Length: 130
Image (tube, rainbow, N blue to C red; front, top):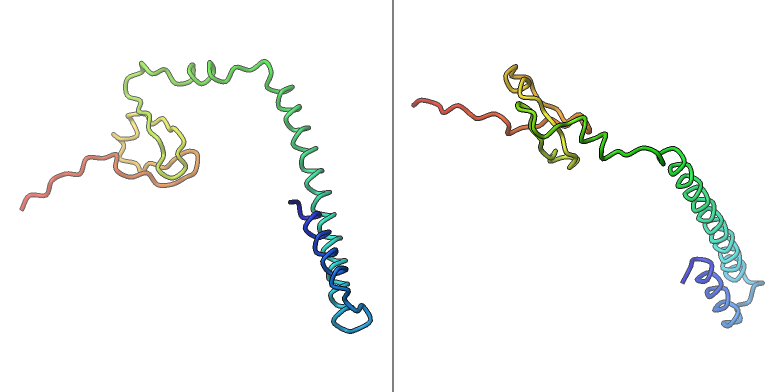
């Protein structure tokens, strides 16, 4: 049941109860029902506009990206046979990230290039001598 249908049902219940709209309570309930009706219509209009924007965006994306093959471009950027490059999934944003081996040698703190989260657990901890 949509919001507009629910408001219409509520208004029907109020009419079925034969509320006296001349009393203070009746006036308040009638005004509230009218406000709910207006809000429901506004929400329905907004949903229609959002759907239209979504369709327009989809058409635009098809037009802009129709000749691009992202899978081939992605594979060309990161050759799996390259030595010294590691692929892993960021535990924060779950995006696949590629890290060059030289970053480990430099001892730098590693951050996810997608979300900026500090990535830990890529260095072997040195055992402490007791």
